[in-house]
Amino acid sequence: MHLPPPSTSASPRPLLVALHGPDLTAAQMEALTGLSGYADAHRLAVAYSDTASPGDAGYVLAVIRDAAVAGPVLIDRARVYVLASASAAALAWHAACDPGARVAAAVVVAGASYGGCCPPGRVRVYHAHGAAGPASWPDGATPAAVGWLLAGPPR
Image (cartoon, rainbow, N blue to C red; front, side, top):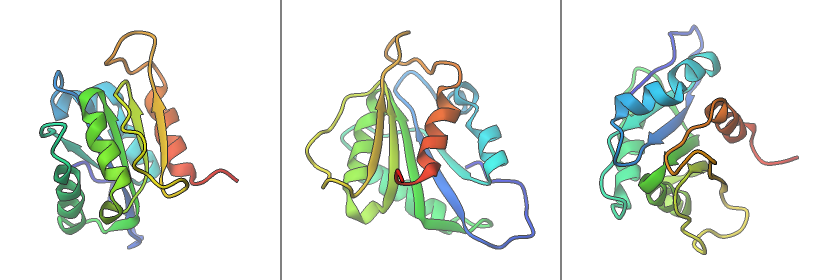
């Protein structure tokens, strides 16, 4: 878990759950995406997670629950986001479609879609594929995707 630097504000922070495919570890995902630096600049907590099997729908729910009670940073349960790549995409889709997860938005990079489960307008999902291969994170893709997550619904 990467926590934002200490602050004088006691306000809850958004949580970004970062899931990766089978060829990466949580540490490699952190290094590859640069999410920790982005999180520090934007006051986010990031839960880097070594994912379970793509069919383990309860896994992301447990990560969110555990992060929310792990303190010292309060997590804003209305601003929980999921970012996933490769086979972890199924976990992100499950979380986005599960009302109990209370996920505000999800970004899926180079992963299969899980269509048809989300009621229109309930959750925003940004689904992208890169030209460099199934596990690519093109330069600049992570800040752009996370910026999209944090922007909220289109105005």
